[in-house]
Image 1 (cartoon, rainbow, N blue to C red):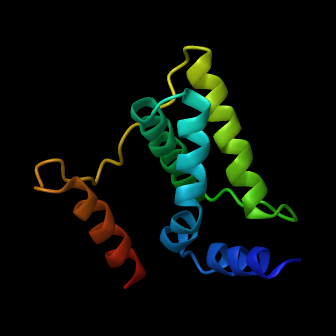
Image 2 (cartoon, rainbow, N blue to C red; image 1 turned 135 degrees about the vertical axis):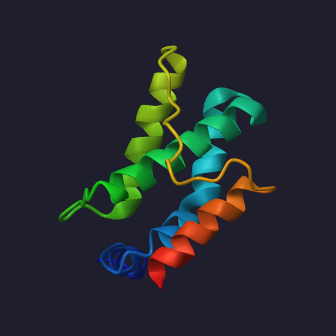
Length: 117
């Protein structure tokens, strides 16, 4: 197991999905922009990948014996395939998300921070 895989496993075990996803954010974004041939669609699909990975974590899905980097690339591949097939790739936003907040991202960060406490 590489040092990166060990770090990922530790973050997953300790529930630090925010740090884990941040590790892969640029990789996901680059693959999605390249896979959609443009930054606008690429950013949308990358966001969908991140939400999908987060939702799987929240649902308790774990990947015994599979490095998380493999999971990230596979979910990215599936989401891009759905995009090209014309299937919906976005997932519903979490119910607790405060859409009235000035910056919706602050609501997500606050929710993750409160969960850690």
